[in-house]
Length: 467
Ligand code: SF4
Image 1 (cartoon, rainbow, N blue to C red):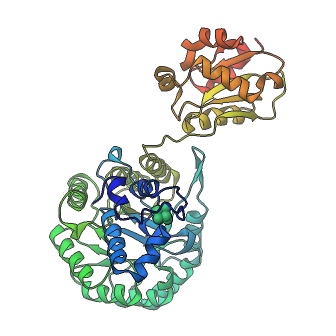
Image 2 (spheres, helix red, strand yellow):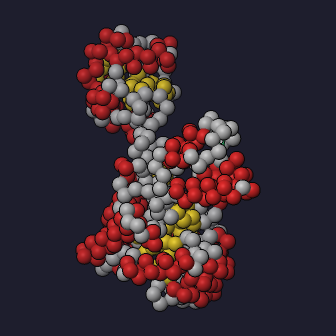
Image 3 (tube, protein in one colour):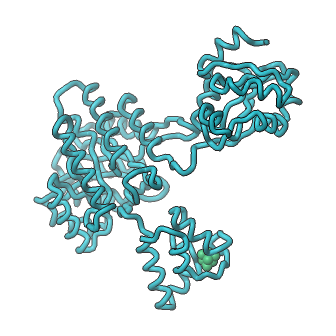
């Protein structure tokens, strides 16, 4: 694998023509290493490869050398399609994790229509605002519990109308064939080829050109099936080492998942370098009430979001399962190379007037959205200065020198806040208390130390505002 832009550069036309949108081949090469572009985004290279064997070889070699360690698989079509796998590292801080595991929620074909609709709608309509983004749920897993091909076909068709990527679940090749005849053009993932049915599933994956899951607790069997499928021409493979809930079962699952990923990334053995499926829904095999099962789903999901699930199937759509899982996923899959940040500047909260307070916070997205929502939801009118701290939170940026009195002065000038208010009183976060004197000296404003926690601003204002 190539690791540096210089190594990639050798494969490029080196004309700096700019057709790729970058000024130089070297900056394009840096973007390839960063995974923001692909070799085929260089038009001259692609054109030359069509007519010149030497360039064709270069292009193919470059694609091979820059492809991720773990194969990438796409499920679904169009804008809602999800990419899974495609990872290059075992530890997030070594680079970043690229493709968050999509969450699929099950429906089964012995549910009545209204129940299927209810569950599908919940998946489609789920939206959670978090750090400036809307988090959504990605897909629906359709389980064949009727063992009736026609029933499974019609439910797969119905679910496909919701436009979400799908996993079709049946070990019966006849049922799977019926559903694929109906929805193969939506590119569902089929689940699952096992030691018993793999020949039929191999045939189905090739005939309908859909990604396929291979399922076995035995990693040698999994590897041998993966090799057989690959050699037969199946490109999109997902491995399910079987999720077992609780105690020894969960520990065994964890060991299998880690071993698969370590071998796929570090070992020479690319036969297992495929996306891994984990199924928190296995928690429903355990005795207990629904809340306990939903709790265990969240526990299993949390364990494997961190290491190394690429796709997951759930049942429980209640917030106590979904919310911790989506939030953990969001945080693990942020790019550690670029802190999550918002635009610095001035925000007006609840249409403030000239007499209303001026607050300051940092442009670390989590801090900013917490402060902004605490002010807005408490109906506080105010002016919020957002300081460019390079995406760092208050405490860290005060310590690290990104939150300084000089920068506060610049921000006051750049935003023209002095023309918008009839006072010079600034409320700084409690965690920036030690800058109080310096900011007063630098800006000529009176500086008030607000609470440590923006949730307490309302109470703080009642006591301290107007000053
Ligand atoms: Fe270089 Fe290709 Fe980009 Fe042109 S399009 S600058 S040849 S990388």
